[in-house]
Length: 132
Image (cartoon, rainbow, N blue to C red):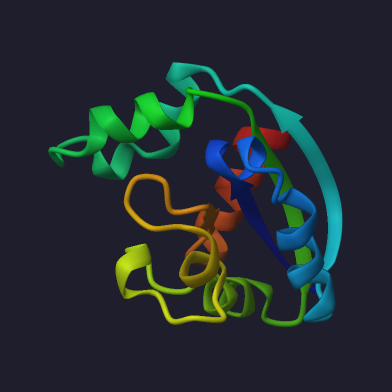
């Protein structure tokens, strides 16, 4: 079984959409192995998005991710990384197809509803970062 990290971003918690999004993951056949509601620390978010540190949107992304609690989940299933990323939709919600999480629940960056690991290596590092 492959595992991936999912982060439901602050606007999802504020809008009361956590259950609906987790249900989509479970409806697809994925299993939630670990789940926590947490307020992230700035240094953790900066480390998580370090690959974007030189990009102009980085400060706004970090500020957004610490603006409220997030839900962190370890999700597993066959091809979990690809399956979850497909369910998420395009990173830019304006380009995300209807029926995807971003296409249905978000409008603009950085508030694009959900983060999902993009590779087995990233999933392993991200799960370690947030769950130890």
